[in-house]
Length: 186
Image (cartoon, one colour):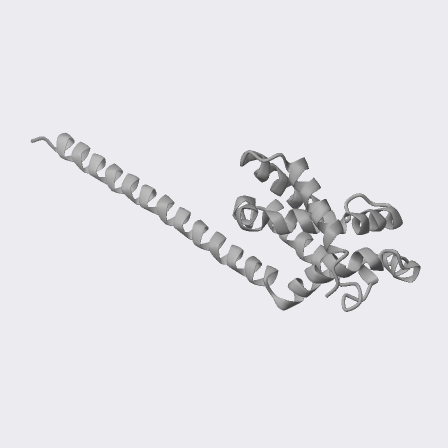
């Protein structure tokens, strides 16, 4: 065997080792990405199920419709982010979903992970808070207010559509459920 043949075999063996290393590295990166996605999703779901967010969701579902009829409460809504989240619990939900929408927009968490487990809460929260969003946008004069939450809602609606359900019907059902839940007393 000549030195050229030995060098060629050595070069080929080195290339194979490098190729295997690259493939293993990409697989490890994919596993790391999946673990990071899982950790992020678990954190979001823990906060979504937290007493603070759950209390805000109950407030928005059962109390906000009547509160929106109160001129003083509506005037306070005009203050947008300056409102007291202990009184204006809708801010807790708005801020939560807007922050989660930012994570999705920035690619820190995949939207489908959220939509699979929380599309109903995303869509229903948007339906229940849309009037408040419109008030904030009108007062501030900026369409970007709560835009990440709206993007999250649009993503959830798109996900629902991919499941074979008309998002407009789902949103209509949520609106009907909300109008009936507003009649319920706690």
